[in-house]
Length: 168
Picture 1 (cartoon, rainbow, N blue to C red):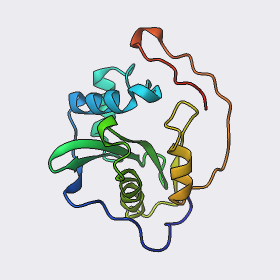
Picture 2 (picture 1 turned 45 degrees about the vertical axis):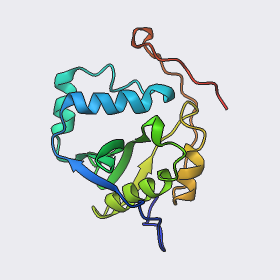
Picture 3 (picture 1 turned 120 degrees about the horizontal axis):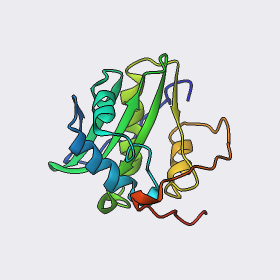
């Protein structure tokens, strides 16, 4: 995405709020990352050591934003501006109970607005065949465009206990 999407965007439903977690605890981050990413084979941060993850989360160019529904954690997104002037929507997801409740698209637009407040040259997101089947269509619907398709084979460690989703 090389420009902020024009026009009105869907607002979060009443009772939802997003807050940036300043220096989030590794335990909070791992809990969200693991519960949200379990079904989509999120593994890179699972194998990262606590000290390395704490250093990453303490970097001012990395922002972790938590979605709450009437105070209850419902999802998070992470913006990574370490490759300035571009920002990467590094992670985005809802906890399973909130998928299908009609909050995902407005949450995605909130993530996009948050990123564009930093005035990047571009906002990037990566997805893969293990992601939720609606991920890519929702990213495109929100204003991203497909720039490149790569075939990658990842050596996912067996010891972390993730299953590979069926490829759509």
